[in-house]
Length: 156
Image 1 (spheres, rainbow, N blue to C red):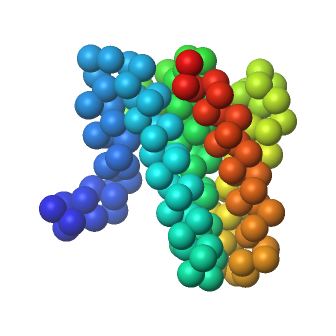
Image 2: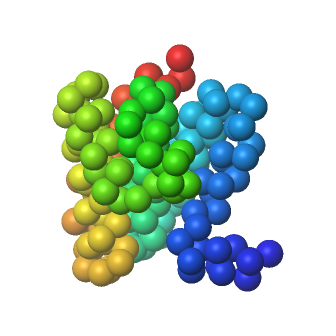
Image 3: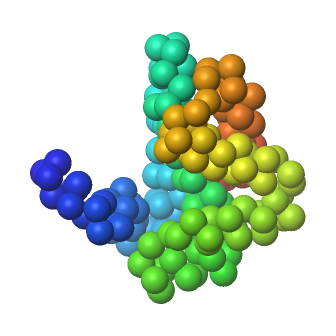
C-alpha cells in the first residue's frame, strides 16, 4: 500500500485529497469537517516535532495545517479556485495562493498571514531545511491563529 501511495504522489496525485473527495461525495459538508480535523491533527504533530527540536518536520506539518484550512474555507465559500479544483481534479499551488488572497479580503488578514507563514515554512523550513526552531516559532504561531480563527467559521 505504501508503494502504491508513493507512486501516486510521484505523479502528482494527492492521495488525501482523493480520499476526502470520495468519502464526502454524498455529503459535501463532510469534506470541510474532514479537512478541519486533518488541520487539527497536523497542528498536534507540529507541536510534537517542536518538542523534539525537529524544525524540518514541524515546518511541514504547520504548512499542511495552512493548506487544509485554505481548502476547507475555499469550499465553504465556494470560491472560483475550489470550482477549478473540481474540474482539474487537484489543488495547484497557484490556486491556494489565489484563494488565500480572496479569503483574506473576505475574512481578515489572519488568512493571508497564516497562509504566507505556512508556505514560507514549506519552502524554507521543509524543502530547503534552512530554518532553526527559533525561526519557525513565530510562523507556527501565525498558522495556529489561522487554525483558531478558521475553526470558528468552519465549525458552524
